[in-house]
Image (cartoon, rainbow, N blue to C red):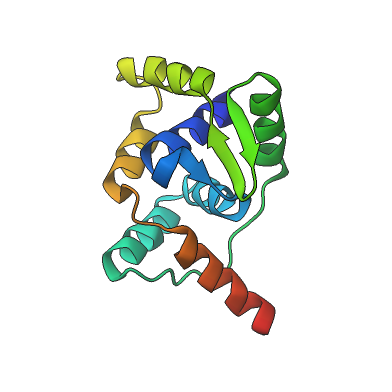
Length: 130
């Protein structure tokens, strides 16, 4: 449930159109695990360039997304995932309680929608070239 809440917050607070690709969701999931990683994303927003050598892909996130889809909170689209109407209502309930997901909310709000799909794609395509 915790990971589902994080996914919904990423989609609602830090994603354009409440949509995101899986690599971008994995990037945010990776960053939420350590303040040093969060600093890298904050710097990326500042410079409008993502300079992260690599980030981990967490199987727990993939499972959480599948459960969120099954529960009708998230929907798959052509490029990744988007928050559903039920997910939007759920995340609004989360946001009503200041004690829930405080550090995550603060971090995601500080980034806003500044970490774009283009930044993630550019970084990932650099991995393929090497």
